Image (tube, rainbow, N blue to C red; front, side, top):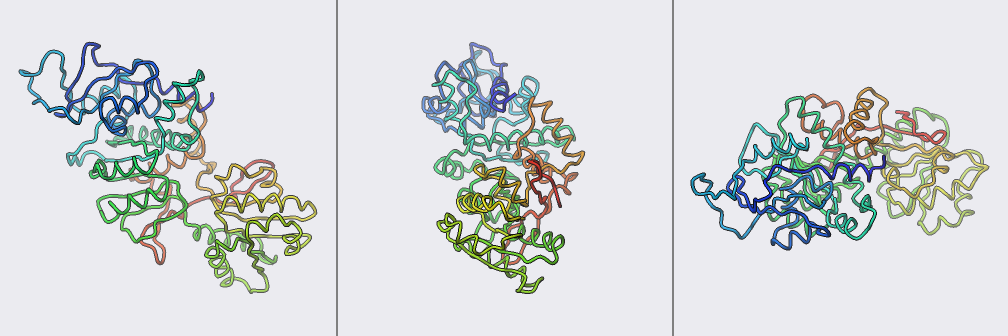
Length: 463
């Protein structure tokens, strides 16, 4: 079953316990309208109809992250309505008062969707308060469903967020079974303006753990707000770029490029202790070239390593590139995170069929969907990967549990989300990742990852 079909299956889960005659309700002394979704309606349109914020709808109705369908009953927070006292003697028969705990229990019983529906502003030490900020592009997905006959369509940019969310939610389920009480707030961050409104609304002030956003510019803004709050942990879940300022509570799950270079060179020198090496990169990433060169110079003599830098436009000159290489065998380190540079370089090297290559790249290459798998195999490409399974029983159990829940096998970001959630929110899984602070930085970077290579169109772990 395809992931999009899975999404649609999950989209059908929602709250059904309100009576049809109800028009509004009060939850924790806050007023909500109950809106029944009609054909061709979207979340954005509904939010405008009630003058409500789109993300407030998501917080109050977490199941909409997985889709909106005709007949759904949405709790719409009313910003401009006077809150009536919660008193059974004064509330009319058409108004029902429920607590957040009651609502959460009802959601758990009716849909097994373990997300607290409303942000809590009381300090409750019995709960681990978590926020997950991802670009779901809910309104784009609404529009796709409304304007297309194919109801399985998913906005392409939502895929990473959905994969990550599925893995994260599976980890929440596991921790709940272990007895952890987790209050999870999920927010859609489709653009900078929406994210800015989230920050200024102060809805994150009581969150102990904030995962995301995945884009570094937005994560930088989050750090400006909460980077010195030692009661919080801010986790950058997928970005390879790091924050620039020195904050006290930042954790970067994707290892720094320098950490990756260290590991690659250590592995390379252990397996190739006599061959001459080539360090090749582009001039605009001189910091990575310089770091790799310094690392190599500390361990090998200069005569064993040649350094070449190119502009990406020079890569079309195959003869120029070939003139710098040996004709028979080349072991190369290419410390580049630039998609355009890497996607031009590898095909050019791959066309040199009379030369044997072994190439060492960076983790970002796993995200470059325009790389030819044939080139990755024939160039014997090695790279770090935090999204690769580790052939352990732990990973096998993850896959089995994922399939039982979603009726599909997980994508790479789901496993990373699963690991990160378990590592940060529990005490039992501290061996999954390993965070350290490095010189000239204050944030902590993950240092635990695999090095993989491509053999016979499979990815194999070499270290």
